[in-house]
Length: 379
Image (cartoon, rainbow, N blue to C red; front, side, top):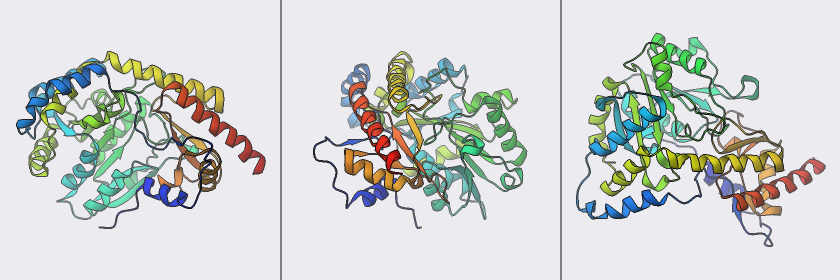
């Protein structure tokens, strides 16, 4: 297997011969990792459960964790999810990498589709599965929405969507989500939506692909599943708590597969994660922080806030030169869009992650704004 170099490794190579401005403290807007403190009640639960480290966790997840996840789906989306329609996972990265390998293993000449640009795990999973890749190019012309080519999709076995989207911050309209469910049923491909940013809405709650499935009369979620995580919503990426929910027939076999993978979450993490999933109030505190950050971005950079996520997908021209010079002059790192896409998609953009408290965020944005003024004058 030959995997593409990871975006952050590419960034290191791009900047390796650049000496940043020593008069400014280093700052980075590259990684989608919330820099806010994990809420105290979650941390306390983790400490209180430390004695459980002497026990092996179940692959299927403890009942209290599954109940908390099902409670979250009920409170947040009004979804009644049965026990066998949900599997807790060790975050979503491992799930997004190994689910395609499980699902495509027995299929000859399989094809997997996903948005472009993308979270690189999708591509790695396709490579590991030996699948042909169909890119769904997200461009300004299509509003950064995955295009629909029914002839191409009719040959797909697995389609991964990601709404709200990383890196473009686009959000798919509900009617478009319903159409994707119809396509999954009509062309018999499995549709998996990565919903890890769905609770970071800025203008109003967003629907799940499972709701779109129900709206299409697909109450058993045939050919449909979603994944989600506490990493973004609870500022708790270290808990490594995610889930997949949807088609019980597929999940039944996937759970059996997972018993061999060996990635069950330690019990203290499950206890803490259960508290995080069951509580919805603390998430509003983080949404308020992101709203404030986007208010700063609108004031300082003149950009419009998206409907969700904590990303700015900003057009800059030569994104590689922009990234190098921003680092050189202002000791600030951003991620070039071409590192997140293929075949030229993403070129000309940079991704900024607004993941800090207000004052560091203000300083970072002011550095970007100062550099943009210089950049425009020079180019």
